[in-house]
Length: 78
Image (tube, rainbow, N blue to C red; front, side, top):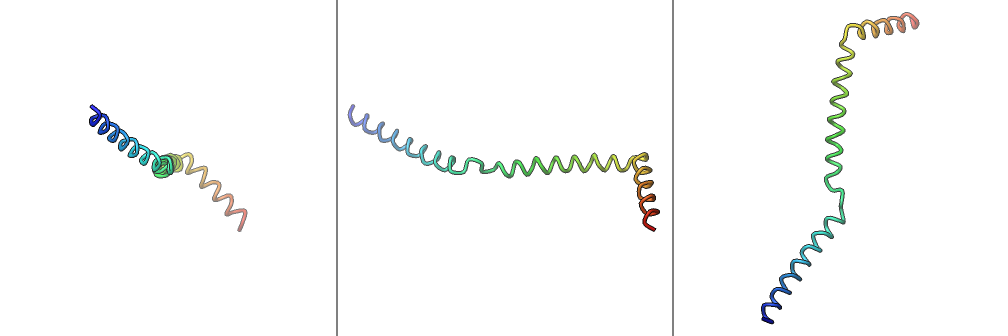
């Protein structure tokens, strides 16, 4: 019974040491990978915004408004 207890105790100690080592690594750099996820979210948001702006600029009413502004600016300069 004592030999079995010693083996179980050693196995538990080994498991606890392994868990402690893993937790030390994880807690040392808790945000590993967070930067990549944030970058991906920002890229998706930027692509969405670019698509919306492109749709707005391509609409006929916006194109007319922008052309009017450019013509007015060019006539004021020269």
